[in-house]
Image (tube, rainbow, N blue to C red):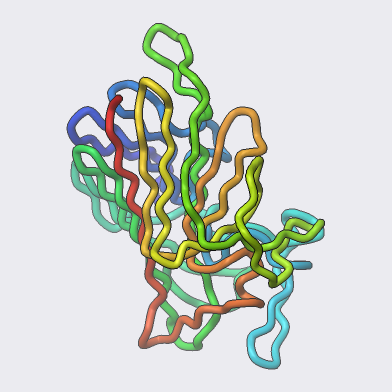
Length: 268
């Protein structure tokens, strides 16, 4: 295990990786601008082995009903790996490989691997979930907290970020914040909602006069959350919230679940 932060550098970008704090990216600075909200619970954490909420913390695997701890009562939220310490398998100046063994309360043994790679103008995060002996349903996703405004070196803040994307649908959200199973035409924000992008996630965040960042993934679901004053979240994931029940992806000993996201940026 490693509780020490790891710094990756490339060009004028610097990434802080925190193996001991849930394997999260704790910071991303581009030309001195910190893009991620700082704090133990923030940055960008991996959501695995599920994303978002599980209704009542329960999901069905065949005839077996599994119960997860209700860490967001009355539901379970964002998986278990963000609460654990990850191992550093390999590191270089611009890349780190982290692993996390799935343990209780998750009922199935398995291994999660994250590869975090920084290039001059992009950050790529790839993740896989492997099953050791028995198959199980799982999801992969990332939960970045992007600062709503960026602080310049003189301490001044720019204008609020603009979020632009063109989803094919929006998952209708019930009063419990979980999808009802119906798809509706995308509605204007503010959002705490899941959207479908069949051609792959493609969301652009623009901090006017400072920086443009594109969040991309081959996956077709993204949760956008902009109801908080300090930050906005753009979360690519392999299925919608409560997806272990509505759209499970099976991990088998022969077939892992794999996903990736790329953030690319341009200075304005």
